[in-house]
Every structure is written in C-alpha cells, then in structure tokens.
Amino acid sequence: MPGDHVPAGLPAGPHRRRQVVQVPGVVAPSALALSSSDPADGAAAVAVTKTITLTFNNALPADAIANVVVVKADGGAVACTNSLDATSKIMTVNPDASLDAASTYIVAYGVTDIYGQTLNGAVNFGTA
Image (cartoon, rainbow, N blue to C red; front, side):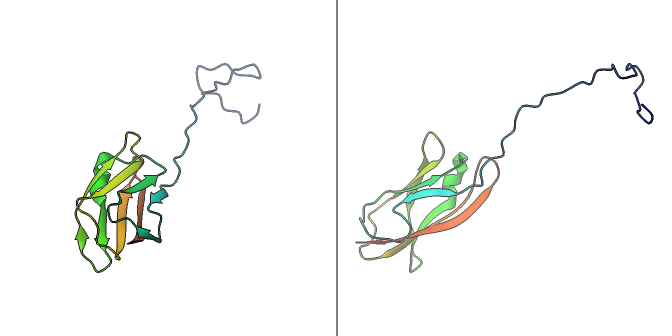
C-alpha cells in the first residue's frame, strides 16, 4: 500500500503477518481505604478494656503498625501494642492498660499500603 513502510526483513504486501503480543491483564489496586473499625467512629459507651481493630481494604506492610496511635482527647498518649493479622489488612491496637472511663479517644492513622498509597484519618470514640 502506498505509504506503508515495511521494516527490512519483513515480507511486503497484503499477506504479511502482523505479530500480536498479549500482555497479562494488570488490575490497578483499589484506593486505600479504612473498610471498618471496632469501635466504629463516633461510638459511645465503649468498654475501657476494648481492643481496637482497624480493617483496611488493601494489605499493609509490617512497619505500618508504627503509624497508628491512640490519644486521649485532652492530648495524653496511650501506650499500645499494635499488630497485623495474616492478611495484613486487619490491624489490632491493644492498649497496654485499661482506658479511662467517661473519656474521649482518638485513634489516628497515617498508613501506606503495599502499593505505595497513603491514607490518613482518625476514629473517635468515647468510653463508658
């Protein structure tokens, strides 16, 4: 065909073969999100012995546990032991001591998933 450039070494004309390369499907990861929390954001009358769980839609690297903190609304930090489950999507935040009664707490997180996506947010709750 006029203007049809054929690289050297390839057959010319209407019977030449076109090479098709198939690439495996690549699915973009979902945007990182907090799927759920226990207690839920805004919960009241939460037990002072409550273990907190944060469930994310994407897996997190092991070092993400260092990026979740619990603070009392007045600014006092709460010592916690954090861990990830086998799926790396559920983080358990276990306060080292009972929380204070009739108090408001904030669970603040700034995590990056295994795809490099970052999510910052907070869950607020009050104790009984």
